[in-house]
Length: 635
Ligand code: 7RM
Image (cartoon, rainbow, N blue to C red; front, top):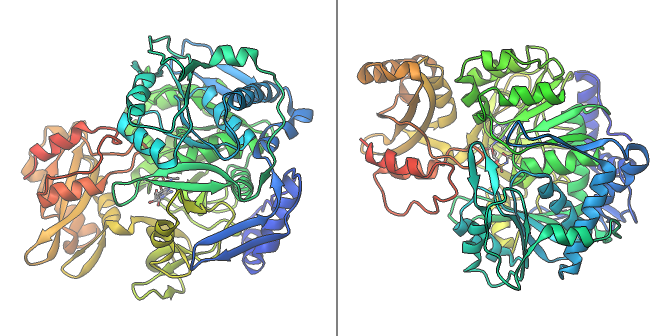
């Protein structure tokens, strides 16, 4: 196996430059040396970045599950593939070996086929974070069905629109799920969702909580009895490199979610290669990513990336605060986790608590710790570095998107010196560029611009399900011929990238372009502030002015609000400049967030503008109730 691992920065640059000069050769070698194929490609890549048509490994034939499971059996059959850590710490953890995973995936694949699912059919998976979720994903891939995992925190209406958009024939769900001290009634959400779905013929139900559920005659079937009857052998479907592997919905700037379409071979090569290099995975490591499989992070870095590398991957059913704020650290200690990958929002919420929750556990097994999902602010970075990494495990601040399929910009541990808040350097084979408003590429360092990628990479999404035109317009039209990420970034004096946030989060105040992320960073440094979100609102003189929604720390709650506002603005003045001062400050108890921790600025913008009509679909929010509260408290 070879993924061209580099040992130091000098080697990285040499290797990087080569990968850019000869990208076809670069990706071809990785594809050639690390996977089993039924048949290899005729051509490495074919693309038209104007029309948004991209193909990798043309005419190659492969099945991703043969690469995730079957090929490991000879050497790693008894190795643990999945460690399942249940929500309740008193429930015993499960260790599922590669042999057992093979049996379970084959049985599930046979059940799906028996129930009429064929190659190309769409299957909606709506499950909690239990092993069956990974098994269901792999079983779909095994028979060539296209999985569409919908995060099990989404409401019935969000499920309905996703099922209908892709015309799913089947839903795989469970009676319920455990989350902290709550039980979530997943099956009844599906029942409600399906009232408005025409295409679903069968619903397979996993038993997890034992909650009572209604089973609709002729449609709903308990899964376990079917599995008990199924054979533990299954001939994998031979897939073309460009056959769809999955659809995953991501929110767009309009209300309608985009079903990002990923295909087989390119995604396989990219998720495997990035996993190995970014987490410096070694044979006996225990890797844990705390994301949900309902997000791209879970697809690429809980299921596919780790299993493609024959790794041991942890699936955690619970939440960071249950039964107490030490849970993450307890699990690391318990399973001797070596790589830990989480989100800034989780880090910030735990950093608010007493550090003794961390320090009482043994985290000495950790080698690499990661961050994903949003810019990690300086304070959170340091807390993570000091208390979790103990200043010895490098933080990989990994920048990527649902659309990119895998990590694009990130330090390589022990190779790239880390720098707080910087995602640092592109991976070999990845060509980021910064663009100015005139659509010219900005050369050199110490510059800011819109982040684009100028050459295709194997993991990129190929389309939006059912709407290629939208795919082309959203990602390939703003800067013709380039993939536009929607993010802004700066490149520092040594060429390190710092993602400054979505470009749509830029507010023009009196003609100055102000990114909201650096202002939020500055505010968050104020000792009384826990978190903040800045948006623009129309202003007679300045064109736009800044409106800050600010959450205080417990220690800040008792302070005089007017004094605090003054202090916060003085702080902004001295850190960024008086131009960035906030016209309005509203203290709030929470911010509207997506389930993966991203602030829904669209909603805050409307509130700041005083437009309380039509917030779009707020049921996908983690905390929809906060919208009312903020509306009521509006200045
Ligand atoms: C993996 C994931 C994508 C958006 C992306 C950025 C933001 C993600 C970072 C980040 C700064 C990071 N996929 N983002 N990672 N911003 N630093 N390390 O999150 O499709 O759900 O979101 O998330 O704005 O465009 S996603």
